[in-house]
Length: 254
Image 1 (cartoon, one colour):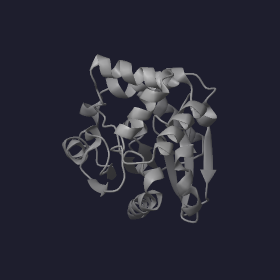
Image 2 (cartoon, rainbow, N blue to C red):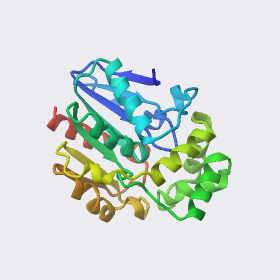
Image 3 (cartoon, rainbow, N blue to C red):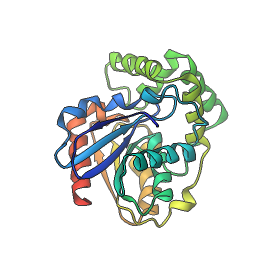
Image 4 (spheres, helix red, strand yellow):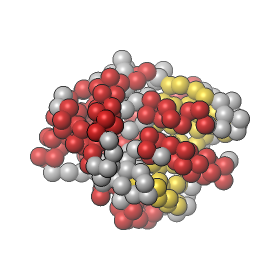
């Protein structure tokens, strides 16, 4: 079974997935404040990351979504909410397709749309070099995703956690997943409630105009919130405000 950590015993079940730069430990700042009376949170580590670090796979969007649904089956969840961050928000959209009758709502945090985040070959090469071993390039990426407005020690911390919590091959494989996958034509018209959370200091590819032209057009029941003081990692930059947005939305669709 895919690695996961559970908090709470509430009736509303919530599956949470992480981004490219860390396992689910990136959510640590939220944990003391989770509403564990109303919600049961399960934080899932993707293959090659965290508690699933030893589980090999192809690291495709279909495989990851299948793992998420299999975990929900294992937990005996008939219905549940999904929270995805960046690349795992793309995976969550595949879950919406493959388990549409079971997902009650979806929170997309600084997300990759279902069309992916394609980039020129030289950019992909730069990203893969960072993913495999180049710490300086990796720090540049974190800086770029936060408008270079955070302490250097945060960038150093993010890169160290990336190395410590994941495998190089998995990092490289997920890069190709979210840069080369496009199933956007399949999600258009889905009626599942969706909250898209944008960081006001995030990179242009994750900005409000991008979300307006993708998520807000594709999903019939979608809304958008902007955290002006956050970049790509609001669970670490503005954790309490992020949690208030998440739980407020989940309560509406309980």
